[in-house]
Length: 480
Length: 148
Image (cartoon, rainbow over all chains, first blue to last red; front, side, top):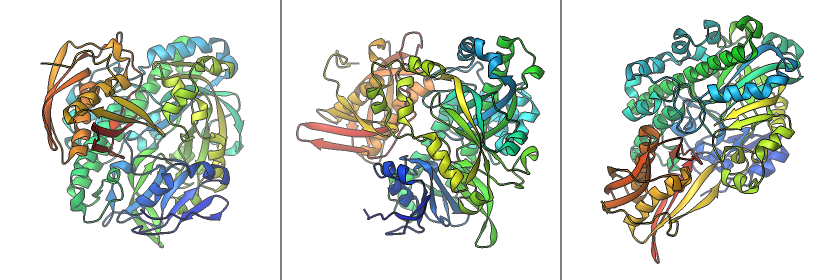
C-alpha cells in the first residue's frame, strides 16, 4: 500500500505524483463537486495502479465520468510504448467495443408524438433484448468467423444497411488485425446466437429529440437541428466479447509471475504488446470489436425497418442516416506526437471515447474540417450529448474524452432505494416511454444511480477535451 | 447422484454485499465441498427467480486452479459458461472430489426456457477482484465479485 496525494493543478485537473512503483503520474479530469464523490471509491488508486505498468507514456489518465472498474478504472485512458509496453484486457473491459451509434432522421417530434407508444412497443418487439435472448439469425461457425474479420462490412454485404453507413463508423466498422484463430471455441459458441441482440444492463436503444444546439455551424455539418428526432443505440460485443476478455485474462493471470514485475492488482494481468500472448489478445480483441460493429449495424437496420413500417414512410422520407458510431471500450494502435516525435502507441480506452481533431485522416471526409463527432449517452431516459473532437484532446489525452454519465451507486443499492416505485411511471411522468425485458433492469438503472451527465460533459467541454455541439432529450427507450 | 435436498428452503448459504457497479457474494459452507456447492446455488439464485428452476438433467465438471481462489474463479467460470454458452441453468451441485487445485462433480439443472425462467441479473463474468477463500471458526467462506 502507498499513500496517494491528489494535487489540484487547475480548475479541471488533478495530478497524482508518482510514489512507490508508479512510472508516471496520474491525471484526473474532474470538477470540485465531482471530486468529492470520487474520493469515496477506490478509482484514484486504480489510476495510480495503472501507472505501474511498463511502457506507459506521459500519464495514467482518467475522465470525469471515472468510477471503479476491474484493474483499470472505468473512464481510464493509458497509452503504451509498442516495444516496452503492455496490453491488458482489464484496460479494455469485458464488453469489448461497447459503443454508441446515432442516426439522424428527417423527422421532427410532431411527426411521431402521437405514435410514440406504438413505435417503442414495435421496436421492443423487433429488437431482441434481454439476458439470453437469441438473435434473429443463427450463424454457422464459418460465417461467424467472417463477421469477426469483416465487422460492419459483413452486415452491409448481407443487406443490413448501406456502404454510406461504413463511412461514418469509427474505423469504418472494421478493425485491422482480427484473427479468428486466436478466439476460443467457447467465445465462438457464445457469439453464434447473439449477433443482432441489444443485451441487458446499461445497454439501450433510445428515440431522442435535439433539445439544444451549442454550436450551430458544427451541428449543421453533422446534420442536426432543434426538434429533430434521432435514434441512439448503445451496445457492444455481447457474450462473445466477455468470453474473449475472460479467456485471455485467465491465461494472463496464470502467467503473471513470468512478466518480471509485480502487479498491484491481479485484474491488471497483462502481456507485453510485443509477445505472442499480447499479439494473440490483440487479434482476438479485434475480432470482438468487429463483432460489435456488425451487431450495432444490424440493430440499426432493423430500427430503420420498424420506423418505415410503423410510420408508413419510405427510407428517403425518413432519411435515417448514420451520423456516427464510436467505440468506448477498446485498445488501438494510433499515432501521436510524443516528445516532438510522431510515435505509434497502443491506447487503451476503457469507458472513454476517441475525440479526434479537425483534419485528422481518421475523421470521415464529410466531417474532417470540423472534427470527429463524439457521442455521449446519458443514463436511461435522460438523453445524450453530441460533441466534437479537439486538438487539445489529441495533445493531452491521446485523443480521448469521457464516455457517459458514470455510475455512482451500486446496482444493489439502486434496487434497494427504488423498491416499491414504478420506474416506468416515473419515466412516463417525464414524457419518456420505457420498455424493458428484465425485472430488475429499470430499478438498477434509475437516474440517481449515475453522475449528472451535464456536469461530466461540462468538464470535458471546459477542459477543451471536446466541444459541445448539441444536447438531446430522450422520449422513448427500450432496454434489456 | 445425490444432491442435497431442499436447497431452496435451507439457509441461503450466501449473502450479497454491495459493490459499485457490480455484485459481490459471500458464500459459506461447512467444508470446501459445501462452499463450492452453495456457490452454484448462489449464482442461480442471483441470476434468476430460482423457484422457477428445476433439475431435469445433470452435467459433470472437472476444474483446475493454482490455489483455492483461482480454483473458485475457474469453477464459477465453468458454471457461468454452462448458462451463457450452452443455455443450461445449473441450480445445484454435488462435489465428488476436491482439493486446493482440483474439483470434480456434477451439477443439476435444466435447459434455459425464457417462458419459464424469470431472469433477474445478467452475470457477465467472474472477477479476481478481492477474491478470497478461507477457513473460518465454524466452516469455510468464499468471497467473489461478479461483473454484471
